Length: 77
Image 1: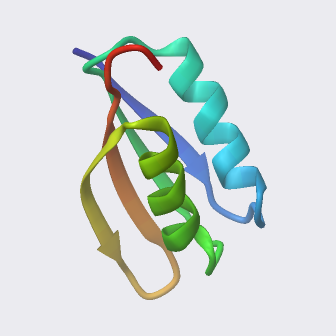
Image 2: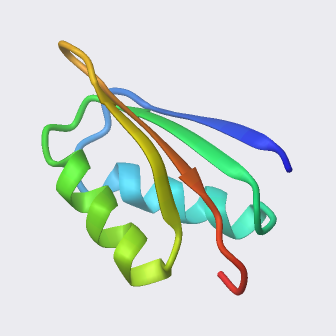
Image 3: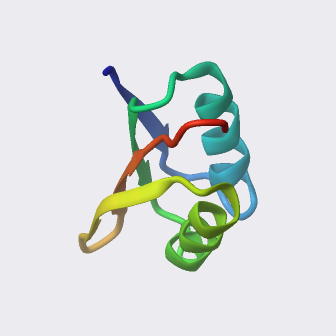
């Protein structure tokens, strides 16, 4: 298992999800991707992405100006 950090600060919708999708394609099942984003629409977008792709959101943190989500990649992504 590897943990990949993805900095999406300053990117607006849909770019954080586009970058997350690219990172997920390069990673292995069981890997974690930690995304930091400032886009206000990121939370609903990443929740929809996880439902659609079958990946699991392990944690979500809301800070003043940014959000951090940790995703565990599932098999067959």
